[in-house]
Image (cartoon, rainbow, N blue to C red; front, top):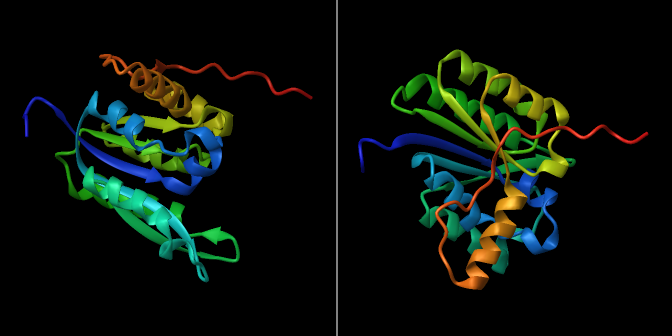
Length: 192
């Protein structure tokens, strides 16, 4: 491991992102990894997947994707869901806080979610002087989340733009150095 690279803690709210993307963008692993590789090395990586109490989801071919994440150093964490309410967000927040206080060597926290429920988490990470990168689906990201990331001077990256860029680069079979788009995102006024 190169010492000059930042050590990252990655937390992915899989269901939140997966539900927010259109059907042509569901395989977001490689574009996500490309974004993350530009910032450092994942030391801790967790992906939270909500699983209903009675499901056949785990027993079909869809589970292959979870092996792909594991091979990239991202541990799948299956979270229970009761009556349509998942424990994924609270578990993600608890694990992130544990890493924040127990692993001081982590330089940056990468939160992959469009959910405004992570705003208090972002504030706690900022209080400890750590960098934060939020990757979300812009159309599903709350205005409050994007405003908070911008207010604190951190980066918000639109995952869907990077998926499209990644697909184009793969289709052209060329490599680019900059496969991601970052920066502040302007909030469009809601139509009444």
